[in-house]
Length: 139
View (cartoon, rainbow, N blue to C red):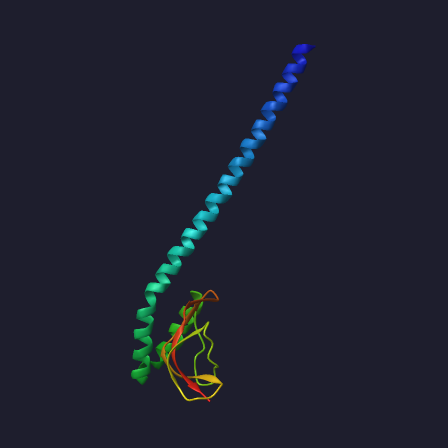
């Protein structure tokens, strides 16, 4: 009878050890998946960030040469598919320091609006990747 009790206790102990080991492994597997996803996002973000000067050059070329205008729609479609979009910054937009970087200001008024975009800003997956560099007009 005593042997049966010891065997039962040993079975319970081994079962508990197995359950803890399974839980530890499952936690480890989840942690590895999270790390892989974070690494993938970091690489993606770094790649997109390195593309910004190229996008600026393409944007200037399209603005300079009217025959390149059809390229704008194609570029915007591709950027949208990549999760990248421009921060609104035209004369109808009110200045927002979270979205715009003011490098010049003119006027004395209380209301600040965008007078000119000097460098476009971008959202990446709805987070500000780079603020738009703008000239501000106070009215």
